[in-house]
View: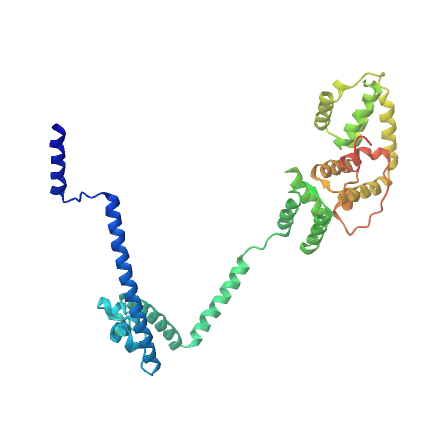
Length: 208
Length: 152
């Protein structure tokens, strides 16, 4: 008695929720049958479309343009194929080439700065050229003696100090070999250092 | 210089004892090499610490005879000594001369009045040097230059 009441309540629930009470297996078969019918219909439609397409091909072979037979209108396709101008899309002006300086200055502030710098450089060059080339030559000629004077002012490396430096380097690995000796001999001749001076420097190095 | 005095000490203590005669010969050698007391003290102290304790006593200072003979041979070299030192310097350069080797032998050559000759053998490659077989008296020089080992 108690069980019957629950069954009645379940039926009410299915109805209330609008859920079908048929078994899932039976419902699957129904769905498969329905799908089979749809496939058959689609196959029939495809066959018809194939026949129509072959007929259309025959017409195009007759001289008509292929573009006329396309589904979409010709105008739409041509617009899509063209490059989209981002400046137009954004409603801004195109950057003007460097030949038109006024428009460039208005449209692109950075370009304006760039142009100013370029103009300044050009102006400087023009000013230099206007003030004659001799002025540049004069400046160069004034600088040359300065460099010479600086070179004269620079103290020349003392040959003994230079030789001492080389001699110290010879002993870095703690072993003297014939190649190093030959090098030092050449340096003595080049720096006009006597053998006695060499021995004196050598003693100083080793006893330090 | 010290390498020569070190060799003299080894000879004087050869049988494990130093005789009075041996000590006198060492004094003479110090004068000959123009060695200061400090320099001699450094060499003798090191010898006393590192060599003497391990000597086996075999006699009563007969090493003096060996020292006397060595000193006499060294003095006999006289005019030939510079030639030997030049030759040894060149041979050492060909095998590679160490800084310490150069300093030790240069100082020894200086004490015997041949510093310049030895230096020419090492530092003047254009200077023609005759290859000579050095005498036993110059053994300590050859050892310092690495031309021979102690075993030889």
